[in-house]
Amino acid sequence: MLGELLYSDLARQYELEGRPQPGRFAMFGRLLHRRFLPIVFCRLGRAAWLRRIPLVPGFCAYMNLALFGIEVAARCEIGPGIFFPHPSGTVVGAWRIGRNVSIFQGVTLGAQKLDMGFDPSLRPEIGDDVTIGAGAKVLGGILIGDGAVIGANSVVTHPVEKGSTVVGIPAMVVARRALAARSM
Image 1 (cartoon, rainbow, N blue to C red):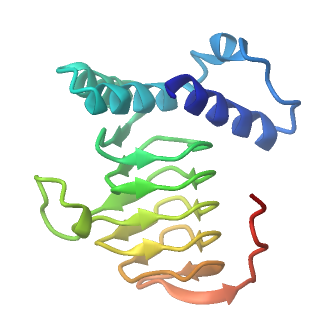
Image 2 (tube, rainbow, N blue to C red):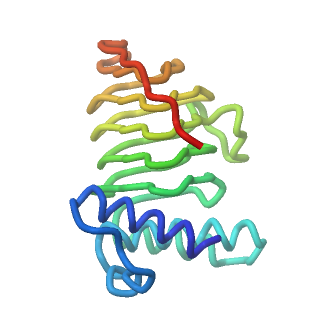
């Protein structure tokens, strides 16, 4: 499962870069890349947390913070295809992030009030194919719908419908688009 998730993350990076899909061993060549290694630490930390392996989740979180300036909670479930173009200053404390989500620098996803116990009802859920712009804050137990776009520096404290674009402080809907049905 860990290898499949990492391969999905790498394949999405290649797609966004306009490159052909990577071979299975491309991960080793990309391992130390500044856009891939933070994801590796996230995935390793989550895998260790799920298996109740002590110290490893904290070590991975520390390495991400020290090397890349990104803090990702091991309790956060992250779908395949996550992309951090510039991870600096980012805090990922959502309880769930869907597939193919892009999170730019300086983003905060977390609770609106102090939550040391990581209560999912106090933390945001991010849908599939969401883009969260630089400096945005998404706070509280809210749902960001599939295909939503959160504008740079927006502060989101209310749910965002799928296909909506929100901007501002507080974030307000400025556009809506219909999303194509996903083929299964």
